Length: 382
Image (tube, rainbow, N blue to C red; front, side, top):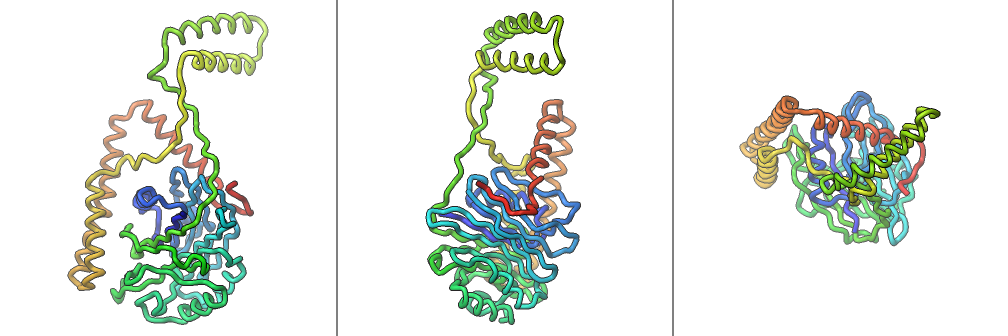
């Protein structure tokens, strides 16, 4: 099966830890995010085991869409479209046992003209899952007031054999001005996926809730590549010293008189590696996410309390429950900010050279991963 989530983050950078934890706990294969608010000066959050594909950063608030794709999936980028104040989407295809499945992350701006749906019509809408914030309302899926875009979605689905899927009796958004609940976030799927399970998930710190669909389809996965790692605590020190000493003598004789710096360095590297090979065992390990260093029980408790208060408000829709939720929302943001500040302040005081190199290595890896985050041409994940 394939698990796809869609979430209007309303600025994703500060929420990335909660998004990351959610993706791991729910075993999400593709995480589609709208309103990333990523600008050219933003730090792009990378998530281990996922590839990030998005629209180009812009300084305009309320824009930006992207998809985190599980690295073991075989995928291909189909198209990226970004029309200011109208529509943005990222489309990919994923290989499955039933052929290629297209997944399209969509954000339609509130002021967009309904004709923007014609742009989506240019995609191959066979075997497809479209998801995102469409800012469209209709009684079939939303408690919000029916708008023109909602009516056009009905026609669009009819013309392309698509079905709108949402969780019954659930809303994904609360209007901040009217405090009314509605569902501008939904899935549009090909008719063969009508039986897919859709859920509205827990609060992740935005005014929108994430929605999740489970498609009963078998995906084609890449072969897992594992990295060799030395098990240093099982190093045979005596054997290593003896082997290295013998090889070092040969190295000194070989490069005593005539040598180039490059060849001497290469030979010395091989000498060390051969000494390790003969005296230290290896294992194969996959790099994985172990959680944010600064995340603690207090953060988890605050997030859970915020989620519970949001559920309470959605049930009662009273002013009292709304104020309780908003207060806890602010408290949670403060607790997370203080946890980061406290952890890193303590860390730098105790930091030794090894810890510093680990942090540098982490940042180097993040920048390497982020280089291809804005594809300028079609590429594939094969």
